[in-house]
Image 1 (cartoon, helix red, strand yellow):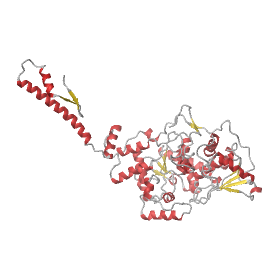
Image 2: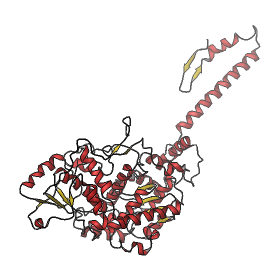
Image 3: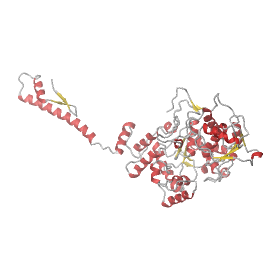
Amino acid sequence: MVKQKRSSYGYHFNFRSSSSSILKFFPKKPSFFTVTLYIVILLFSSSVLIFLFSSRNIVNDDHDFDEQKHIFTQYDQSQSLSESQSQPLQILQDQLWDSPFSYGLHPCVKPTSRYIASKGSNRYITVKCNGGLNQMRTGISDMVAVAHIMNATLVIPQLDRRSFWQDTSKFSDIFDELHFIKALQEDVRIVKELPKELESAPRARKHFTSWSGMGYYQEMTQLWKDNQVIHVAKSDSRLANNDLPLDIQRLRCRALYHSLRFSMPIEILGKKLVERLRSRGGRYIALHLRYEKDMLSFTGCTYGLTNAESEELRIMRENTNHWKVKVINSTEQRISGLCPLTPKEVGIFLQALGYPASTLIYIAAGGIYGGNAHLSELMSRFPNLVFKENLAANEELKAFTNHASQYAALDYIISIESDVFIPTHSGNMARAVEGHRRFLGHRKTITPDRKGLVKLFDRLESGKLREGPSFSYLVQEMHKNWQGAPRKRRGPLPGIKGRARFRTEESFYENPYPECICGPKTHRAR
């Protein structure tokens, strides 16, 4: 037999023994020329075979493992598209617009059979809300639950009038007050104001501890021994995100999603604006573009700004007393994913996702810092941008002028009803809208991975990557699981102990699953 030994290329022949084996197949007296010819043919064939195997291995050894070329190879193998660098991937329409599969999940906020309805009380809680519209909305929902736990009557909360927006709106200017009282009458007694005999009575003024559970508020009932009225100075994050009774969590959802309905003027105009958007393009993206002066100043994010703009933001931060952090490294903030995307970055991001230039985009935001100087970088890619001022007549908006919270309520309605919602920063509105859209059936919400995107944007800027199919593939792969699909609420970050861990938990109002979202028993949320 032919002896063989394995090499990195395959098998090598032992030519000495192979020669004698070959002779067995020849006539008894083959000519010297014939034998020589067969040996030459065998050697030549073996050489060709070895060369082919060697060549293949050389290609692998000499392959350029630079990330950009590796991305192109991976892209070509998985997508089977042309190598054109000029056009983004053509994504199917249903992938761009359709909501994630919801597995039959649906809202469930009804009390359980163990729930004890409110009996009313002569003990009262007054509340002074703090923050912008959505911080106040979630805070009010928390205080409804707190009043229920403490068996108290809740007085219609006072809204924040001293925040950055300086909005003088009353509760009834923004919310349907009568609906709020009536919708929660089986949960907690709510009154418009304190009884006259208690207006001048001593009050227990209290800053309830953030992210507190049932035990804490049961202890706080001791305050009723000496006071008939408790005044709560802040309303935000008064309840824990997790480990609360199911009925308390569902009460929070009933308060936020069913009871805190906007006032009729806001509801009517909001619905009109949605209808006008639909008439323009059918489908639209609501883009919460947090490129606003206060947000950039608070976060210390100055990437892409002029020196004069950066200095203006620094002075604003320095002069805002309740912003505790004054010195911020903008570069570190951006690398950590803590900065809102710039208008230019948003344009690149949307184009990489596959949205065409004709896409109708509603800008749900206040004034964009720098105005058209910065916004033009987004508009050059997506010229079909729409603001409230483009949709509504001046007369329609006149009643909302100088009332930032009422303006924000219009943005909220339009964002909830949009086909796709995209926030550029994880603020209070972004969290509230995402949670509400989950509650309504997991409507498509694309949350940019800012930390991951910054790395790609920097490679674009340095020339290591170019916009095109491979870049689009990277962005799409990065965000395929960031589109609002059903999943359970995230707990605290690992390694953090004490009360600090509560701050790192995902907000209950950002994802009210599983307490307020139910489905088939066999369903397992990812």
